[in-house]
Image (cartoon, rainbow, N blue to C red; front, side):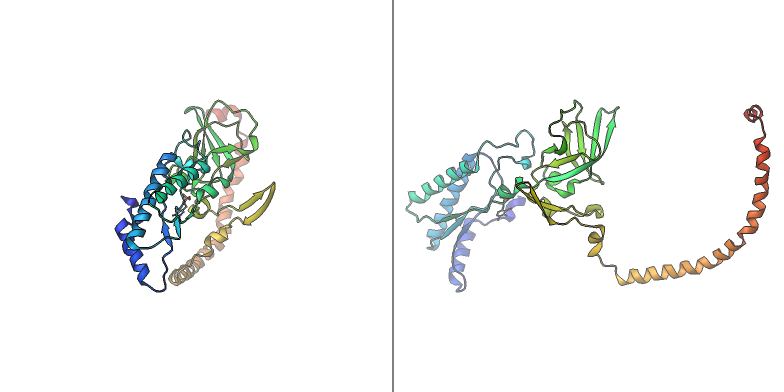
Length: 324
Ligand SMILES: Cc1ncc(COP(=O)(O)O)c(C=O)c1O
């Protein structure tokens, strides 16, 4: 039931449309829906938007309005969808044109059946446009080969907090050996893991070529949600963003520095005062310590005496030393 926070029931929608008609500064424009990803099956999309068309007709007629626009929102399935939580089910045989054909035909059919004026059709594709265009590049910093457990850990410098859907929605973003794409893979699989104190597993049981420090791995399909959800967890600065087109690259967001990470933090005045107090008491304690230190040469002299005996010890023969 956690998704119930979205949307309206039909009767509520009717009340809102009637209220909009009453308020001078508002003009009724149309309807909007957004279901998010729910299925790759075109038949599911057909059923969903036929029902939506029927709801649009029912509400419009009940409220005596004609929508100029119906907006179908986003959630359109892509051809490669790591958020389906499975490497095997990631690829989608249907194209966006397949969904367009099914949805437009179904909605037109519902509108025409009852002689309803055809409104403009709008979409809000988010991840369909941006999902597959982002790639996160990360460097290997160590390969831990555990002979006993028969697996290796390939440690990379990017953690999954830079693409949080990997942790929160078990997104299975493909990981590619960017600088070794043509090299043969080795038999032993590896865990691709980021640093810091969360599991940060990019891929478990990855099939890779022989990897070593400074090799670059490409984590695919991080073009949506990743950059805006990335955090500075463990006070680590976030990487730069580079726009790439036709082999040309442009820096569009510089890498953060440690100073950036702390730039917005404010130390409350009382902590500054307490720090000053601590500093003051430390200097007060330091004085007698310095005096004692000044006496040290005397002690050193007494210590030096046994040191002069050392050469005598060196004369001990190996045999007698063994006995000792
Ligand atoms: C109202 C609305 N429209 C469009 C989108 C984009 O959805 P998607 O990225 O799944 O295409 C969202 C995302 O949640 C949304 O809430």
